[in-house]
Image (cartoon, rainbow, N blue to C red):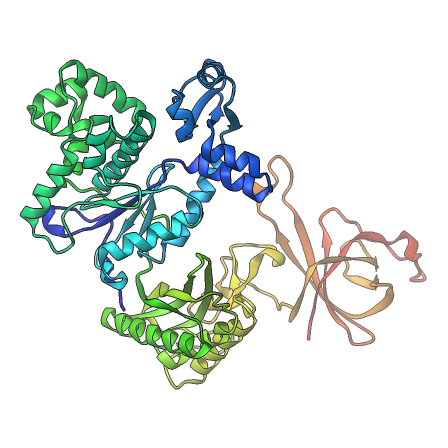
Length: 589
């Protein structure tokens, strides 16, 4: 059940044994329009998008231009780049038009990529109309490459999207073959199957896929199969930058070069001199002679394990047993790598295509299976299996060497969090509370590089707390006076009466009550960063610790420039004349 982790960026060669699955969606924008019409209850529009001439358009240099026609419009002669007037003329005005929505198309593609996570730990985007999956070493989980292609095709076509697929040793070769298959099918639909019979023989129909050899083929067999399939391709098929490569293809056509194998047979120095070294790089990547990395949408987890079933599961007992098996496999992989998990992510892929996720953090890196299972059990009852679960994936996206566990939680002293200590028990308790109430509910203190008290500390989830006890002295500015046990969320204004301008408060009115000051100590001046107020004096505060006659101990400050209120000879003053530049910022225990 444990899936190997091929490095998508490693240097590739025929002997590397990589298997890349390309899923190309040639009519993504058109299929979205059908789904939008169906969701709006407009059956006539959905039928027209499916069977009548229709196309998406976007602004162009000559006005709105066609970006993608549907098969019926293409059969009527509508092509990409054609103006709307030309398209209407070709279809006698019967064409249905809609503005292109590239952002919506990208969101749909990202959603499909999330669904495809069930088939591979590394899923990347292939331009704006396709997906690339590194299926090296995972096909056996789906009864071989044929079973994997069938399930991936059923999943995406079941969402209403047309699809072509190809498997090759490199991302570029797989992408080119899948796009060539879509091009051949479009030619067949536009020209009739009799005229496109050659294409139909070279590339399988929509419910099949182009496969370069098989996953157990040797290097020589793979090399021959790859050359046989990519050789007949037109040069413009080997790059997503269609416009630039189209100009190169036109130059090659003038030389009589209309196939990739004919281009590859030319002297390399002549090709580089005439068309630039980039074309040679594309050829080398296509034929698996140079590294061709796959760039996943999300960084692959350092360790993950997965399990799939031919028949979906749905009972709570089966889900718990599968989770326990995944935990055991994950712990084994973590132990082999000398790592502990700091975060767990459980992904549940349902038969109907829905994806459910559960993520939780650990206050202490761990590979203790009972502890992990106890945490995951808190989330299993929130999983709705629906029609059944076909794939479950457990990943450790954040890991840490277990040798680095010399940390303690805030306020627990300097003892390391090793197994059997009280600190480890508290860390386990934090994990369980987070698992039950939600990530980040337990907070710890982090010292920030701030001078003012409200910016000097920050509450963060305990799972990512500093790896030692934090103290107020840990900041860049050493504290020389006591700090209150409780700091108010923001300073609260108070009316203060003082004997002299620089004296501490004699009495203050705060939260509607009058307090007479019995003892006072200060001031302690704190000055804010000068760069936060360019061209003006930096904020300055004079802090005092005061104790009132009723025993209340407060931390108050006066803003710079406040003169306070001077008492008369009898020590009397009117509270209405008191200054409002004083604030209460904290309460001492």
